[in-house]
Amino acid sequence: MTPKTDYVYQSIARAVRDHDVGTMFGLMGDANLFMVDHFVRGCGGRFVPAAHEGSSVLMALAFAHVSGGVGVASVTHGPALTNCVTALTEGARGNIPMVLLAGDTPVMNPRHIQSIDQREVVKATGAGFEQMRAPETATYDVARAFYRARVERRPIILNMPVDFMWHEHPYQSHRFEVFETPAYVPEGDALNKAIGVIAAARRPLILAGGGACGAREQLIRLADRLEAPLATTLKAKGLFSGHPYNMDIFGTLSTPAAYDVIAKSDCILCFGSGLHDFTTEKGGLMKGKRVVQVDVEQRFIGRSLHPDVALVADSALTADNILYWLNEAEIPPSGFTGELTPETLTTHVPGQRDKAGPGFVNYVWAMEELDKALPDDRILVTDGGRFMTEVWCRISVTDPKSFMVTANFGSIGLGLAEAIGAGLAAPERPVVLFTGDGGFMMGGINEFNTAVRLRQNLIVIVCNDSAYGAEHIQFLDRKMDPGLTEFDWPSFAEIAKALGGHGIAVRSADELGAAIAAIEDRTRPLLIELRLDPNDVPRMRV
Image 1 (cartoon, rainbow, N blue to C red):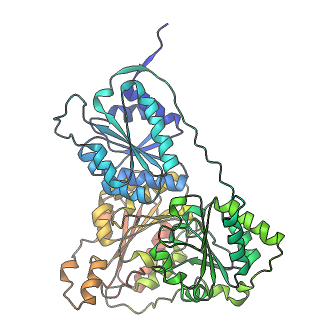
Image 2 (cartoon, one colour):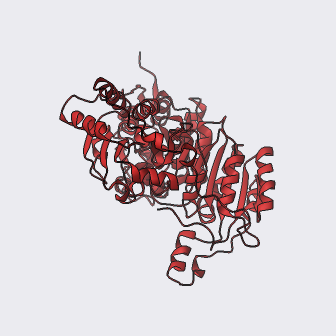
Image 3 (tube, one colour):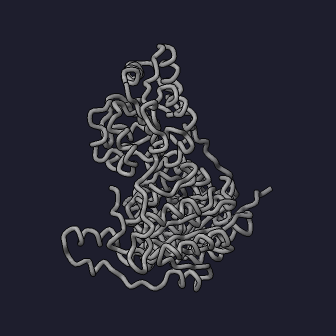
């Protein structure tokens, strides 16, 4: 009996669904439209159409971050792929696993108007490239792309020539197991040296990065045993929420009290952190301190700052292992936390309600009021811009998965698309996006209506200083005219209404109350426009 055959476009859709993918983001075109259609109609999947190809990649990245799985998007060939370059770079630098099913022009027509070397385009982004080799290997190549995305923790582009799609071949399911057993800390000189450094410390401090987000309980046990305060990098914001000696973000975003604690410490135990310049203030915060670095990825050790001792191992297992040996050796606790005043560790310099010119609201004060008013179970997404560091400092989150930073590539305009993806990964939770006026004009307007169409529980706060703020401050610092950085934007609140959402402008402290009431009563995507004085927005803490 001849086995049933499928068209390749059907096999690709089935293979994606076989990897437990229920949601695909994208934009349809010549090379992927039949595959997308079969994913929805033949496989029961959901397709979320974006207004721009790059947005579909960003949505998939956020979906992966919040859900803990692999995000999936699909676009067609040529300009569709080049429209994804910034988003793919963001995902590669953020170490986020996703698969982009990218169509390619026909193999038999090298002079196609949209033909480019798609492998070379992808290489420039830092993402991985997987070529669909033949119609007969389609499902195997899909499985390879998913495997690589999980193992390499970056976007993988599966390149699919359009002239493969209507070939027929029996369907074969492939799925490759990812071997994720965490690595134990081996016995040896490195471990002995690490224990010695920690035992000798009088004021130790534990710092956790994005690579240690699964080790909260183990790191807290170790910190309590050592009587050491806890801090995180930006990527791990919220990891130690609720702990009395949580210092929140370590480095250029620290509070005055946290800076004082860092200065007094003599040993930093770093788990899952790359220790880049913002975390260490270009190494200055680590001077005179012993540094123990723990990371399961050897390539992250010593990349920015060379530690005194390093362990290539899983953060959770290593914390428990260190705790065991401290107990075995009867090492006394440091007593460092006894010197600290817990309530000051996460307290930033407050804003001033009435310190704002006519027609403006004080930015720092508004942040503090919004932190109290926004839903407690929020997912926080931030776009890029001068405004963002105050958001990172002053808007709290419950855990790292509830926080999306879109600044891995230093771009603006990526936030709204990621907010949509985050909301689809956790539809029961509200998503809050902070974006600047430039970022919203660049990448927000084209997707706000997508959020409206999807009926998302989304709150967008546009920090509108009518300027490209990061550039504005540089002109002012050099006593030059900043006029070329300033813009007479349209009303973003009115744009939100025109796009089907609700919008409210805040031009004074008194008007913030109406915006907070709108948060409580919202029934559709809400945009709050904070009108800010471009000469009075705090500079970035970098």
